[in-house]
Length: 112
Length: 491
Image (cartoon, rainbow over all chains, first blue to last red; front, side, top):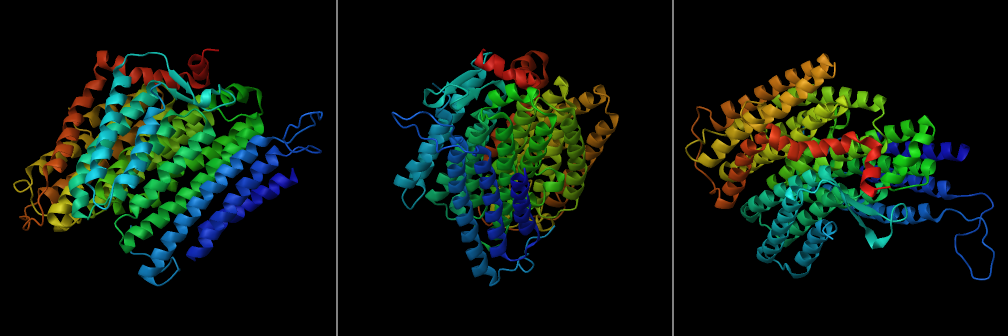
């Protein structure tokens, strides 16, 4: 149980960073932290105590196995996060070229 | 099978455009036009095909609960028609509008990817698959918002991407919670397993889903990104984003998950009502204060999504009919208004209502269609907006929620004020308009006229005979709640 709570705490750390930080790069890093927390959560859900890796081998008895589905989901979500992160970084580079700063308090031509 | 073609056609078109589109946009326009036209034809055929039971397609022939199934029920076929119609008019409008902005093949590839993602979200019956298609649509949307390449557009796209990634993380977290409780990802298996589980699981998952999809739908406390993102995108894309994207990714997903998977828990319906009422009031009031035409439209989108959410939160069949009806109507008139703003921007070079002049002589089509759309969104009979708002208000009174009905009426008054402002100060002011910078081409005019006609035609959906054929099957699907999957999969 404490592991899940810590995992949720990590998620909240990422959320806190995304909402309060002013630096574009720190915001991107915080979004990464948030993604890692969710991935960790998936791996934790699939984990079983004293269980083996989920591969059937011919001739061997079937042991208790960890749940392989969350691992597949984590792979998918890592790829998606890669896409989001690279898009955010690309936008941050373009913003830096336009405004010469990473500080979001100075990037504010949009109002209202 | 017809179901996967709704995802394959736009995805294939996107790849073909990137491969063969070349530097100029002629090939891209032909490919994407063919794709959008065939999607519209397919969606209309499916919608009017008169099938009463849902169609199921098991991807890779893996049956539920192991594999991912696509499900086409009446609600998703309504959404498919809506998405493909707006896509078709948006393309028609884009051809001339994007040449003005140096249109390139990439733009059409991104537009087709956006459509593929939305169609996937509409059809899938697996929550992780829903998440993946949602991300496909969002990636295209981020890139399209930044497409203009000016500083404000990058700023809006960054804001949108950050908000999008927060909401996606929340949704993924909710999926993790659901999976840990039920060991299932297909909506049917989850819906079957949830009633035996602890109520706490529903609350955790529901809270996270509400925050995640609420961010995507730009419901009031989560709305901050929408006015920037929707007003910075090119006009035909704003029409897609405001007209269909926030509904597919936000409202449709909310209705699907909360009614058909979680079984409409009363606590969350209450939350829908409160969030909807707040969005109606604040969104419409903020819209009145705007001078930038597109920002005004974006704020009014927040208010109009509030109507849909409030109607869904009533939890009665009549309320749900109002929600589905208003969803269709808002897609039509809000897209039309964004096309108007695009035409005005092309012709006059400004989006500021104070700098526009009287264009009723110079741009008759734009002026007349914008009048139709303004009357429709303000809820003046005989246009479609009147009937859906009336339905929502009657449903709220019948459900014993007079205060929410009052909120809907008050929000409607502010909508009228906002669009009177558009007409009075913008398109029909006493100032004469300056010389036109560019012509509004026939493609733009055609897109606007088609939607203006639809503004009147869709109001026929309230007529008893037609309503039974169009709205009621979709409402029935939602009202079956978690039992839906038994009828779909026939177990």
